[in-house]
Amino acid sequence: MKFYDRRQELKDLKRLFSQSPDEGRLAVLTGRRRVGKTLLSLEFVKDTRHLYFFTAKKSEALLCAEFLAEIKRMLPDLPFVGEIHTFKDIFLLLLQAAKTEPLTVIMDEFQEFYHINPAVYSDIQKLWDLHKRKSRLNVIVVGSVYSLIHKIFQHSKEPLFNRADRIFMIKPFTIATIGDILKDHKIKDTKALFDFYLFTGGSPKYIDLLVGNKAFSLDQILDFMIAPNSPFLSEGRNLLIEEFGKEYGTYFSILELISVGKIGRSEIESLLGGNAGGYLDRLENDYAIIAKYKPINAKPNSRSQKYKINDHFLNFWFRFIYRHRSAVESENFEYIKEIIKRDYAVYSGKVLEQFYRDLCAESKKFNNIGSYWEKGNENEIDIVAVNDLKQEMLIAEVKINKRKINLEELKRKAQRLTADYPRYKIQWQALSLENAKDFLS
View (cartoon, rainbow, N blue to C red):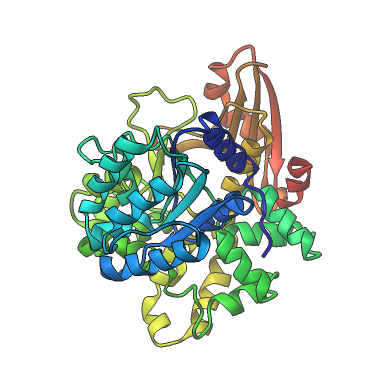
């Protein structure tokens, strides 16, 4: 798949590395696996003098031998003195190599040094502090295990705390970018766009897999994803077990509950059979996998809140694959596909609500976007988008079947909400998938 989008990230990287051309800069690209961090870093350096290092799980000596071979290949005129067996020596060599001419180094899966030799982080810190103002070395650190990258660069007791000039959280593709990819493959159907959003969450890797296997319709997608040897069947486990460690079972149970609509803390704790506060907090703040949300006009100290899984693929994986893991293990794939098709209308209806919230965000017309409900989940409203500058509001009900939407009932449910915005011009909308083209245009 060709390189898509990331214009803002490329612009920001270029600005960062051009701010002080005579001294080193350090940027961090983080985000979960499959989101395109490595491709972004390589696209940025493609026309510059650069080195790419992948931090594999092997001994430091073997890793350094691999790095050294790459340095000799890319910088054949660089003089070498003595033996080099540690990353400390590699990094010093790079700093020296960039004293006369700019050099960019990408260090992929940087968090793996925790398993190889954690002292590397202290070594880098000392050398960076000593040489960065005399060396034109630009470092791009790429890390997939969000919790570790967060710890390395943002925990005050870590040696590389405050050493990063910029930390980029790389997110999945926008709906507009997914649409551009599909158009390049002659697919202009809004239903296909929505299904790609629902199943891939905008992950470049997953989109590439579906496109490469010509899986564009719902049946084609399911036949590819839910099949023997499908890379998607174990994907959630592969992505998260390293993050969660030995307590992954509890985290997986919580995520499964959220995926099936158990989105209140008390509800989760009741079904889990214990206190889930610490786990929910870490899932939100340490791992960035879930988010809590409140009614759009809720006060900051309001306890009315719910949880959602941020990534649509993971939400799908926990709802339909992890939840039915016995069927997966027995390779009863037709059973799983039947379950998905049976529940698709209800499941896709909830995803469609987020689809429209994301479309509102991409439109750049609103400064506050969310949903609304009152005590006891009364008077729920799917979309509330506010432009405080223009004093305008969009209030919308979202359903797969537009004929089931009653705008008069929506206005009744919104009476207390609109009372908080007495001077605002309100646009009332009934939204189904067919209206997406209006937002995309």
